[in-house]
Amino acid sequence: MAGTFKFELISPERILMTVDADQVRLPGADGDFTVLAGHSPVIANLRPGTLDVKSGNDSTRIFVRSGFADVQPDGLTVLAKGAVEVAELSGSRLAAEIEAAETALKGAKDDEARRFAHGAVEELKALGGTGGKGH
Amino acid sequence: MASLKDMRNRIASVKATRKITKAMQMVAAAKLRRAQEAATAARPYAERMDQVLANVASRVTTRDGQSPLLVGTGNDKVHLLVVMTAERGLCGGFNSNIAKLARADAQRLMAAGKTVKIMTVGRKGADNLRRDLGKQIVERVELRGVKQVRAAQADEVSQKVLALFEKGEFDVATMYFAEFRSVIAQKPTALQLIPARVPEMKGAGKAQGATAVYDYEPSEEEVLSFLLGQNITTQILRGLLENAASEQGARMSAMDNATRNAGDMINKLTIKYNRQRQAQITKELIEIISGAEAL
Image (tube, rainbow over all chains, first blue to last red; front, side, top):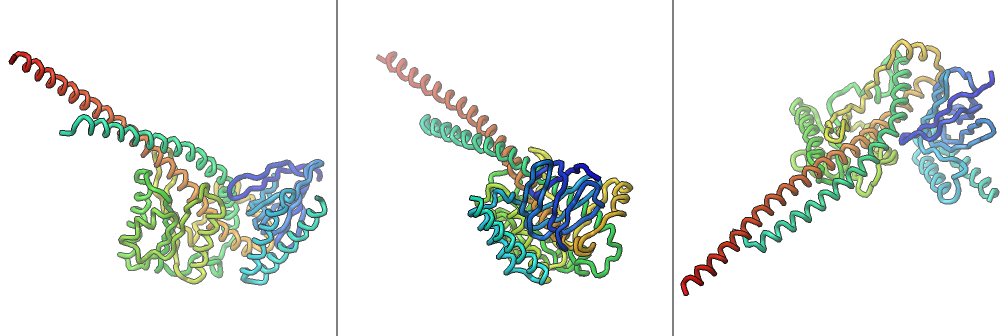
């Protein structure tokens, strides 16, 4: 079933993004998954990581620190904390995110939190690598 | 009787005060607009959160083994009061109204034999409660230098609350803040944070249909426990934002009153001054005339 669906990215402070998306790939707690139009309703925790939003020819990558996704028949809502567009994530901004993730790693209380935080650090460092090449 | 010079000085000083209160009123109005926008912008997140939480909680039928954030510790002995106030005064009864509500509750709970612990957010609340409830204050968060309340501040507060809860320092947490009704009305409000009050489902029938087909990943319990932690932050953020808007509203109307009072005072003083000046002139004329007549 092709088509677009309404994608909303909401932070505690405001609505960050509202688009009609073709597909969105989410970093679920149990692994990445992609939402297309007509996905069955699901509520999923997210781990720190990037989500890919494809809307027509536009594609946006956004890094989120934590949050959850609420997939409904009429659209997808992501309630996210610390969401930053990957394109804006470079230099000091990236360093700050890495630092936050490393602090989370140190403060992690259980294996799962440690795994998430570790993944976040790795992912951010990888982003730093590609960002560096791009310049 | 004050001399004419004294009165001139007095009038000048009241005029200077009026300028200051007028300026503060205008600054508060500008800040109020921003605070209101922030509060409005934060609403979609809180609403979604409520919805999802209501959905999930309604699915979890048994209360056994659930997170203590939802069902409580089973005790009702130690209460934590999170009292949110402003960092600055000169905003009418704003700070003291919140403190008054918290104090009344603290005294009621203590009279009932419960232990009360207080966490203050914002300097004015701590100042206000220090005198009679100083021993109960376990934690103080100051928001000095914070221009605009953001999620980071709510995070800081909620992490402190959760850390205390994990240590078993309290059973019930209640948050005190001023709900923003309008520029002239701010209502001091108490809101229970832990155990969480699960929001009522809106449009029960429709929502019921939606819940039936939801999948949860990883599991209902994990989603729920994550949501409950998040929910506290969200509620605290809401309290802080409402408080920020209320503070500016209260300051605006307090300063409006002050400006008007200063105006009235200036009018009265000016009339008095003119009358006295005329009396003096008359007196001097009489002196000259009677001096001339005597010759």
